[in-house]
Image (cartoon, rainbow, N blue to C red; front, side):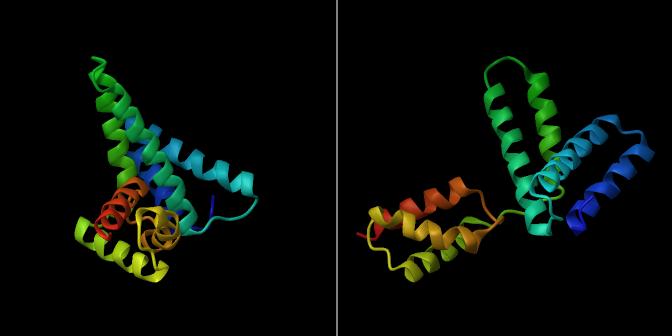
Length: 153
């Protein structure tokens, strides 16, 4: 396993779930662990915490997409299972920042990039994404950039 502290926390959680005989949680944790290990093998390097965080955020996004796709299908069992999976993954991800903090970071990115109009969204995103890195979903950042640039006319 990677030398990352976050990967070590996942490993410790796997062991704890095994000892507690919590099969559902263990299955989810093993899937997370497999995703981390797969990227580690593919890149042929040990992963840092930031890398593991990106992997887990991507995993969480897939689970959120699963939840969204089960809406209105009558398959509440799948939705409940996916929500439980999202809760476990969420334990290892940092809490997302609020709208006010996100707006402040996006305003900073707009100032740094010198953006004036919605056409400059790419410039702002190039600056904003590293500022936000793991603290907010990309779609939230994009929506905030659009809103602020539309008001900047």
